[in-house]
View 1: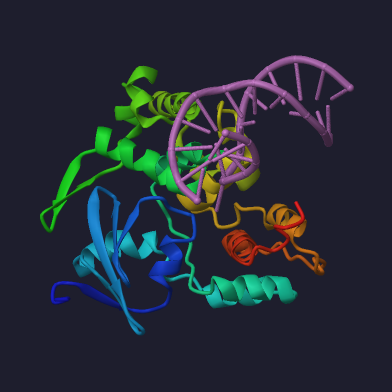
View 2: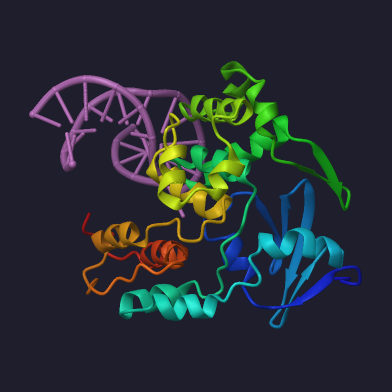
Length: 276
DNA sequence: TGCCAGGCCGAAA
DNA sequence: TTTCGGCATGGC
């Protein structure tokens, strides 16, 4: 593969783990170590090897967009060290040791996690794909069509009948309500950004269809509030699967990140699945 | 075919 | 405050 026009950065995280851990639903695996994502109205191709990550963008575009998007400059090793307090948390952190938390676009993150509720990941991806191809804008990259995520403004102009094509069930109403709330200012991303965590969480949950889980995912993955995900809540969920010692949970500033580790570790290892 | 999915709402207890 | 049924739909 010709990587001549790619921008190269030292490998400080795993693209594969980061994209495929359930925090984003719109990426395409072209082949091993080769991915496409569409964000910020652009198509980005990524290639990773042992030492480097190659991005199909200019250095200035990287600085402007992707450095923050991939949360490149945060010290995840320090966070991991702070998080690990027992064998379970260590296993969880080791399991997803290459994960970075993406800083996704606010509206896309909110809409995606509204759609995610009581749904499985393949179907979430399908619905979001359909949403994009139906109402997003086409971008051609290497002779292939990709589609941007439709803005709240675009979706707010649609009706439930228009959204029926998604076959998203009752989630369509929640999506439409949220889009309208963004357009009319009831949901104000800039205002939410500067609020403290409990206030912003309470505020976003005033909207129908946005409960605790959707709010936490939105605040963590879309608002970049790195302390958004209450790791104690996830510890309790994991505990339902796990019979080991769960004492010594640590609710550090960045502990929310490891909900990914906890969730995937518990799931992939099928901890306790036979009991419930 | 039947169970369940990274939930939320609203009513009842 | 907690519990529970209903909700649309399709992946497995």
